[in-house]
Amino acid sequence: MKIETILIVDDDEPIYSYLQKKIAKQGYTVYVANDGEKALKQVFAVIPDIILLDVKLPKINGIEICKRLKNDSRTKAIPIIMLSAKAQSDEIQEGLAAGADRYLCKPIGFPDILKEIKQFED
Image 1 (spheres, one colour):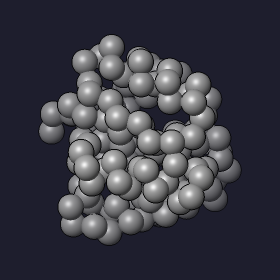
Image 2 (cartoon, rainbow, N blue to C red; image 1 turned 90 degrees about the horizontal axis):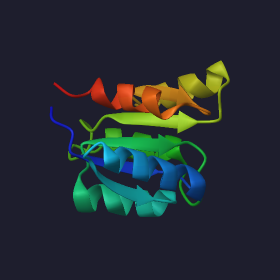
Image 3 (cartoon, rainbow, N blue to C red; image 1 turned 135 degrees about the vertical axis):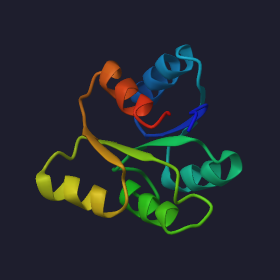
Image 4 (cartoon, one colour; image 1 turned 120 degrees about the vertical axis):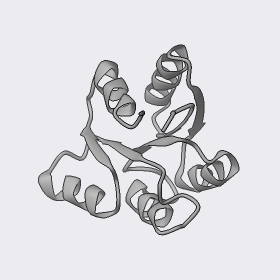
């Protein structure tokens, strides 16, 4: 799969601005949503190739978003990388059980995020 579009879902403006700039510099088209409702609307508007999803979000949390996307035939194949400060093993297991393809604990460096993104490319 060729990854061209990436959706970043995070309510922390410094984090999503930083990621948006760094990822766009790699040649990807980047979309951002800063709450759960906007995230779901954005997913269905653009159908991104991959989603970077925070767990703790306003309106609808990342776990619920992940479950909804993985249970929808239109979006179930989109890889979801959860990025979260929630680093306890039960929290990580909850994210993976919700359908996340990867669960990365913040803080995490951009090179590691980029490496994870590239693992989904052919």
